[in-house]
Length: 408
Image (cartoon, rainbow, N blue to C red):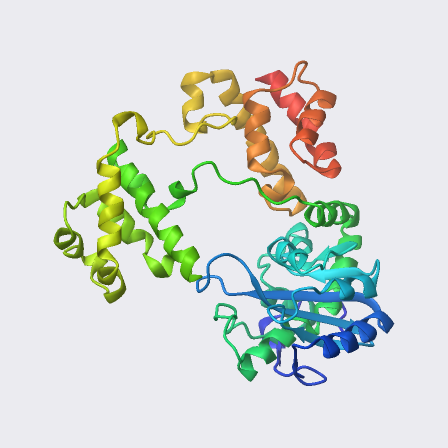
């Protein structure tokens, strides 16, 4: 379909309709059995995507699964009606799965029994190739010269029945994904990055679920502007009350109470419901209706003993301190970090790979703050391996970091 030459803006042809039409959504066991048979008889990679209702529902549940394979066509499956899709995974066996930004969809697919035996991530491939834009529409345009509309990417996919134009959008997301994969694979081979990509794909495929954050309430946007432990306790208490309400109602927390309202209340410290609803951020009908519950959360924080208030320094972690403090606390470590960042930046420019894809920033900070002894390439490599760095990253960076550390 494509020569592999990047398309210009004027070359892009709109992709507006799936080749075989949209088809119906699979909601019954009998229809799923037909899909399983068709995909088992198909050939080649399996293109996959999943739609969630982020911003509408609590959590990251999957509300639609899109699959496409040569010889089987496209299937749109409703996992709320058919939660166990493991038969589909069994049917395709060890076939490669192609996803865009796979880390977003793999956890949800796994909840429904879909666990790829091998993976090709088109977004990761685009990053390793240094493509300036790595969203699916941009990558499809660059590789195939086709225009993929993304106007329904943020809709409420828990809606039932799903509108036909949303289903068309969903089907188009997997329509040409395998063709995109083929072009990117060719470019990776030409750039000598095929092995790098294979290691990255396998890392994403086998990545365990992230550990729970020690104090997730600190992710409330604007918390950094809240001063004092008592006010931080109000942020925490309101966040906890919001989470409980959102989970019970299966609504996105931001729709229950916006972050800006939590921060405003923490700064104002209202002592009564009238004082709370006088804040502009609590002027909406929903916020006013639930104002007594929010005020109760504020009162609980106000009543806490001093020993129970959260720290202004954030949760204790095993990681290094903020880099801005290194020059005072450990000047040698600060020099290591500065030199290491220069090395990563130079390699990023030379190889056309984003710095964060060359090495996770947290791993870089950790090895600079507490390097192994001796800080030679072999020991640095072992340190990075323990931080889940891939072998291609270690081969590139460990010798260079050893040189920087010796100079520091």
